[in-house]
Length: 272
Ligand code: LIP
Figure 1 (cartoon, rainbow, N blue to C red):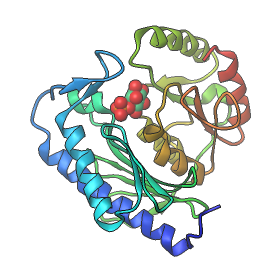
Figure 2 (figure 1 turned 180 degrees about the vertical axis):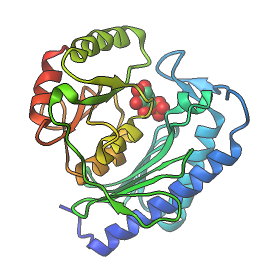
Figure 3 (figure 1 turned 90 degrees about the vertical axis):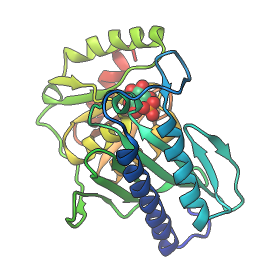
């Protein structure tokens, strides 16, 4: 239940998020040099990078949102958490797909979610390479916009059967966890069409929402990986779960009906 916020106020949060995400995506495009981008530092492992552009993009987002909503909380992948007093918390990944960004692989995005009392009420993801925009407000649907076109409503598509499902996934930056995940994905592969490891959880969830993937499974997602993409997927008709009812860092699984329940059962038996 939204804390006394009217629909118009949540729509305003969605507008603020998209304005900040567009500005950050434009900055990322302009700031990225040719060739490979160096890591400024690493986090969970030597292969978990942060670039100066990640950090600058998050600062830009924080300032853009803060200028309009100075009393909100903020949780960013690079800068950590800042408490607010309004009940609204912005959950931000300035570049989801940082390794893709470093290598110049065209799949990295700005992801911004607006959370109220622990529930994401509005969110947007902007592909920083193509400019594609994915937006959603809880209960009002999910939309995709390319170029100057009008936003088109997203309705997830289901494959004819689980054996025809193209499944997105990702692997952890910590090698022991990655090896465990590789064994689980090997077991999964025997039952689905194929997997795709695109390198951005946010864009993978958008891909399920728009039918470019049939399902998604990943472990280790942080709140900023999942906030906006989880809302966009749900609002397109995709079901999400974890080992239990809700997706979390332990496990995030996503698929549309009618394959969702069968896919969830399969994932939970493959050893994730
Ligand atoms: C990434 C995720 C991706 C996952 C990577 C990493 P980052 O986020 O979007 O799906 O497999 O390990 O967590 O680090 O680029 O913001």
